Length: 290
Length: 329
Image 1: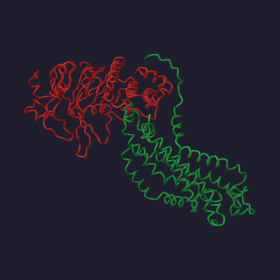
Image 2 (image 1 turned 60 degrees about the horizontal axis):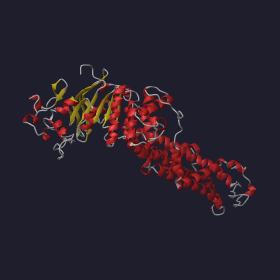
Image 3 (image 1 turned 90 degrees about the vertical axis):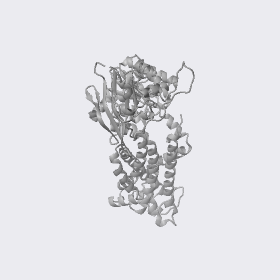
C-alpha cells in the first residue's frame, strides 16, 4: 500500500460544535436553556440560604413576602424560599431521572420491536394497552401499590411514559432500518446488536431526545399532581407538589405558600418545552441543510 | 474455465412472499465467477440481477423470502447452507458490495473514519488507531485528496462521487476476493461515472479481486467486463465473453439490447426499443419468458421453457430456435 505521512492528530476531536452553534442560534432554545440552567443552579445552591428547609420557627408563622422572608413563611414558620429551592432539587431530580429512565427503556424496546418482527406485535399491543390509561392514572395506581415514596414516584412515572418512547423510537427505527447504510453495515459483516445500537439507534434518536425533554416537563407536573394527591413525595421532604398541597388549606390567607412553588413548576415546564421545541427544530432532518 | 471458480451459482431459485403467494424472482440461475474475473450482469429493472447478488451475501429478509433450490459455492462451502455466524464472517471480509446510491449508503451520524474502521475492527481486529491509519491509506487509494484531514469529516461534506469512493474504500478495506458492484455509477453524472469505473478497474488488478458489476448500461459493461451474463425475467438468457457477446449475440433479447444502443458513428435515427415490457413477477408465462416480446418467436417458444444450452465452450444461450440451428441469426 502507498506510504502516507499522517500529519493530523491520531484521533481528532469530533466536530459537534456545529450542532451546538445551531442550537444556540435558535431563540426559544436559548430562552429554555437559560431557564432550566438557572433553576438547576438555584436548586444546587439551595443550602446557601443557611436555613433548614424543615426548621420550624413558630414566632414567624404566616409571614408575607418581605426582605427578611423573600417568599414568606408557612404555618410552621418555615421559610418558603428555602423550601422551594430544596423542592426544586426533588422535583427536577424526579423529572430528570424519569426522562432518562423512560427514554432509555423506550429506546431499547423500540429498537428491538423494529428489528425483530416476532417481538413487535406482542410488545406493541402491550404498549397500546398501557397507553389506553391516562399516564397520571397509571402512575397513581403504581405509586399507590408501591407505597408513597420518591422512588415509587420515579418508577411509576417512568413506566407511564415508556410506551410513548417505544412508539417514537420504533417508528423512526422502522424507517432507518430500511436505509442503504444499514444494509451496507450488514454487508460489512456487522451483527444484529451492532446494527441496532450503532447504526439504527443513533439515527432514530433525534425524535426521542425531543420527547425526553417533554417527559421531563410532564414528570415535574405529574410529580406535583401526585404529591398534591398525597401519594407522592411525603412531608417533611419538600417537593413543589407537596408544598402546594400543604399550602392549600391556607390559600386565602397565605397565598404565597402556593404561588411560589407554582411559579417554579411553570418556569421549569416552560423552560423544558422551549428547549424541546428548539431541539426539534434543529434535529428535524427535513429542516437540515448543508 | 478450467480452474475452480471463486463463486459458483448453481440452479438458484429465490422466491418472495407476496399477497398472492410466493412470487419467483429468479429461477434456475447458474453462472460462475472466476478468481480475479470481471463479470458483468445486464438486464432491465426487475430481471433478478440484484436479487442474485444479494443471495450471494444471503441478505434477503428471512420469513419473506426463501431459496427453493440451488447452491452458491464459495471456497468449498455452500453459502445458502452456511450458518449466520459464518456468513457474518464472510460478509465484508471475503465478499463486499457497493450500492447504487452513494447518497444514502453512508451513515450520516458517523465520521468517514468510523465507517471505514468498522469492517477493519470487525474482521481484522485492528485497534482504533491502526484502523484510522489504514482508513487514511484507503482514502488515498481511492484517490480522495487530503485524506488525513477528510477522514474525520461527516458524510454530508462529501459529494456523490466522493461518497461512492468512500463506499469503495469501505468495500476493499479487508481485501475481499469478490466485490459486487450493484449499479455503482447509475446515480452519478457521466464524467464521475468514468472515474469510478477507472478506479474499480485499477483496484481490481491491484488487489487481484474478482468484480461482479451489475448494470443496465451496456456501455459500462462493454468497457469494464470480461464476461457478461444477460438476465431476463429472473433467468439467465445468455452468458458469453464480452467480445463474443458484442460481436455475435445469439439471444433475441440480447440482440434487442444491442440494437437499443445509440451508435456514435452511424446516421442519427430513432432509437430502437424492445416492444412490450418485462412480465410481472406474479405473471405465469408459459414457455419462453421473452416470447411475448420476441420478433422471432415460434410455436415451440410458447409451450416449453428452453434450456440454457452451450453453443461453444464459453457461450451459453437460452433460446430454442437459435440453439437448434447453431450459429444462425
